[in-house]
Amino acid sequence: MGLSLRTWVASILLLTHLVHGALGWGVDGHYAVCKIAQSYFEEKTLVAVKKILPVYANGELAAVCSWPDEIKRRPEWSCTYALHFVNTPDNECNYEYSRGTHNDKCVTGAIFNYTSQLMFQFHYNLTEALMFVSHFMGDIHQPLHEGFVGDQGGNKIKLNWYEQETNLHRVWDNKIIESAQEKYYNSSLSVMIHSLQHKLKYAWSNDVPSWESCPPHKSACPNPYASESIDLACKYAYKNAAPGTTLGDDYFLSRLPIVEKRIAQGGIRLAATLNRIFSPKPSIAAA
Ligand SMILES: [Zn+2]
Image (cartoon, rainbow, N blue to C red; front, side):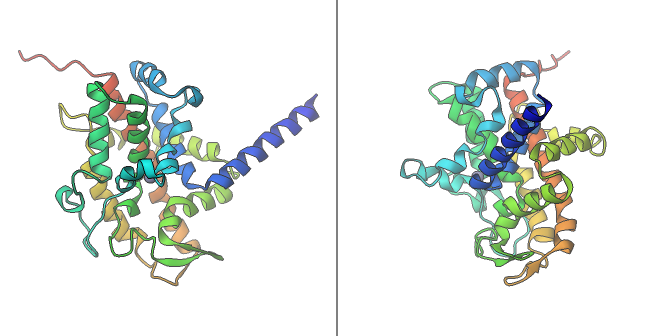
């Protein structure tokens, strides 16, 4: 009995690994953001989210958080392609909403738009709105989704990650997370997520309230998240990562803490945004 159970667990683990491999590790970053978010949902939020999720998600927001990446190249969804990022002029290390966004078509505009659809709920497809908000909250925290227009957020910077040929954008979408799982987390995404949840409870607990904050009467506050991202892109992502470079331990070990914190912040802020929408706090009555 023990042996057959172990064999069964081993095949499930192998299958999970193969599925992840086939989809790419970008899926993992989004999965982690949404998994962390769901653990911070207030009760009413959890009920509302479960009602809106498609049946196949089985009540797990994380199961559908990569859906916007799966559809963005289909002709009928081509209008969503530009919503995954915001362009920053080359070598500018700051963010201005009006500069990188045309007709609100960028990641910050998309977060404003889909959160207001969830707020007002009329005539909208709430399932799609929820999946878009949850995905874009991940994207906006990936520093190179606010990267320079000239190199397409690092996509045009071809370099090596250890022995592998890749590009800088992919290093931040996938490679750092993938190497971290191999090196520190027993090749397991759930072990990595547990470690981030532990850090949120202890190492980062004093920072969490400031990550969640948003001015009164606002449900979404994506602009500061984009500012943080371009700042981190300049200070860490682009630094020592010229085309043709081989990135190894020095780069990996110094950038991993940034990636981990951004995933955790994305999760906390997604939860805070959905809590503001679905579990609003009664405003303090004027005396
Ligand atoms: Zn995306």
